[in-house]
Length: 292
Image 1: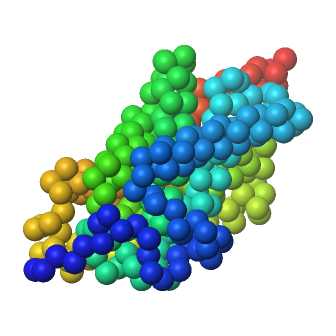
Image 2 (image 1 turned 30 degrees about the vertical axis):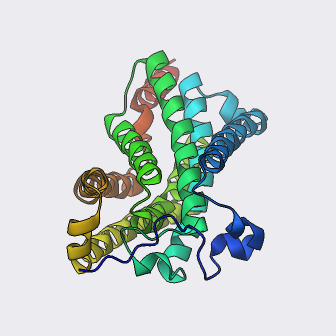
């Protein structure tokens, strides 16, 4: 199959998402290392700012002040992840329905929007993985599936930026984070004691549905792989092939099905799975008070 490559030409002819926001952003040479580093660093510090801002504003809430330190960290991270999830949903929707440049070559096509989105994603996962690592070291408790997902994403997106390939799948794949804002809201509502409200039930139903949609999109990526298999097999760099399909396999057959089950079970049993020990302590203390 003949290779049609736009590698080394990140400026798309058609106006992309960045151009719709500010046309001058599409004139930047995103192949330059200093440009990539600036976007990644800006992304890292932006999400760090959101974390600190969330902590300051949440400190005004009685519920937040009553949480343990690890729960406060998780609370703030939930807001950061929700912010990133909104960004990913917007970019992913644009890539799926409006972008035409990336579709021309699923292996090598790039656009200013794809470069910006990938650099922003790397900055987020740098912040996320750094925070997770510090939290795991301090509290000596590791969430294997969460760490696996985030570290693989950091390595995978960094490799995409370094190799300059697979922007099509990387940018479209960001829409899988559409579940994140609803997952964050679910946890915050639980901590606020609102699990028996209509708002929590409605949000949980939407959350479960987003995981169903994730499975549909993952199937779409496998279909795209089938449609472009000759080009992918012949031209995709080996490092990208291994990295991307390892991640896609894990997400499609392990992570999304597991999270779909957990969130579906949580719909009928609103329990905080992340801090089961805290829930047990509350239950024990409540029973003790009743006896007294």
